[in-house]
Image (cartoon, rainbow, N blue to C red; front, top):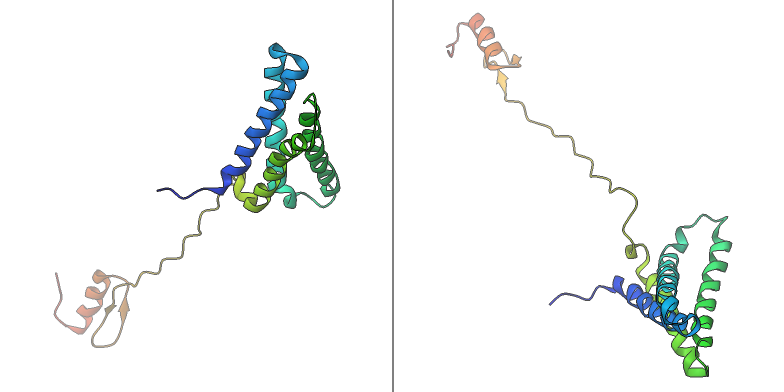
Length: 165
C-alpha cells in the first residue's frame, strides 16, 4: 500500500474551490459562459493560492508586504464570490466557501517548498578526489623508488640484480 502524499492536499482543495467557483459563475453568467469562466478563474485562483502559500517565505523582503496583502485578498475574495452566488447565503454557505481556501493555505504552508518542483537544477555531488596507491617499484638494495617497472628494471641493471624481462 502506498503512503499518502500530503503534497496533493492543496491541489485537491484547489480543485474543490474551482468547482465551487464554476458553480458560482454558472449561476451568474449562465451555463454557456459560466463553465469556462468559472473553471479557469477557479483553477488560476486556487493554484496561485497554493503556490503562494508554499513559497511566501522565499519572497524578497521588499515584496513580502505586497505578497501578504495579495494572499489575504485572495483568501477573502474567493469565498465572498462563492458565498454571494448562492441566492440565500447563510452561515453554512460561508463556511463551505471558506474551508477549501483555508485548507489550501494550511496544507501548502505545512508542505512548504516540497509542494512544487524545484526550478533550481539539482547540484550534482562533487566527486571526491580519487587517490590511487601507486604500485611500489622500489629497489631492494638502495630503496630507489621508480615510477614504472621498466624504470626499476633499468635501475636494477646497475646493481646486477636479477632482471625481469
